[in-house]
Length: 133
Image (cartoon, rainbow, N blue to C red; front, side, top):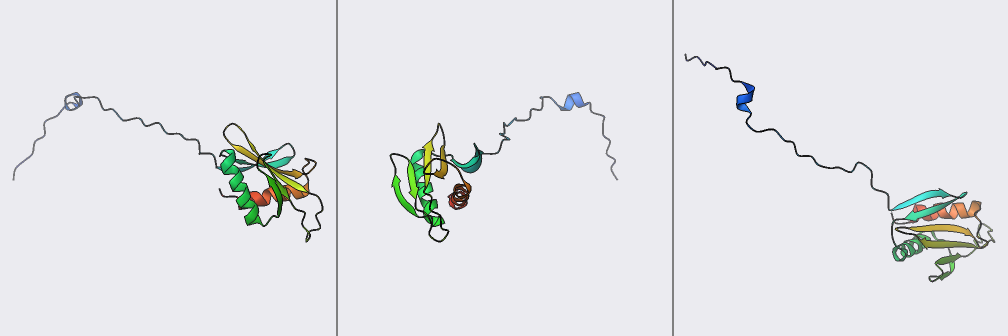
């Protein structure tokens, strides 16, 4: 039977080159959602990470999907005019505005007087629920 005899080896002799680990930069912040519902000045707004053109289209599709009756729309004015609901006996008129900001669009629902009320909050939440995210 053969005996193996190991001779002591110094660590300095075995490692000739320094060990270098590659460093990879990782962004640890989560990406922002493309559509968010946010509180603003006593009401709520939908923030869409898109330009006006895409946001206008998304809002139009969400209105259809939500079965919210649109009486008229003014693309140049960036406003959808909503029809009052007969089944809920809502007589006030509401407007959905799409406003382009620096790198996003903001969607708001208000009465024709520009005020937020209980029904406008319900409408914005319904739109948010049905908007493409």
